[in-house]
Image (cartoon, rainbow, N blue to C red; front, side, top):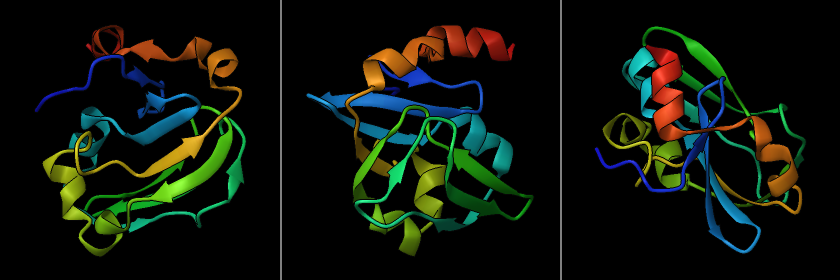
Amino acid sequence: MIVPEGILCSKSHEYLLEESDSIYTVGLTDYAVEQLGDIVFVELPETDSEFEKGEVFATVESVKAAAEIYMPVGGRIVEVNEKIVESPEILNENPYEDGWLVKIESKTAQEESGDLLEYSDYKEELE
């Protein structure tokens, strides 16, 4: 599995990846997906919904557990990954390429991402 360069991870296992000026991809880290096991259901918000940092924006259910997914920085949903709503197992296959959850527009990401970890530091914290 290839982890994109420049990805930032939260302690609650969400990731944030800057796509372009103030547009970011948000998803679940490979660790979170691994811990959940086989994912069977994903509930995502509507486009144009707005969320503050730390707010629950999605739910993921697996054969083991259900998990609430938290917004790593505040923003407005500009795109929802409909493919994983229809085929949640995509999340298990690759949470970074096809298994992203939402794309957001965030004007505050630079200020709010200070507590997010680079992927290598995130992996170290898990050990």
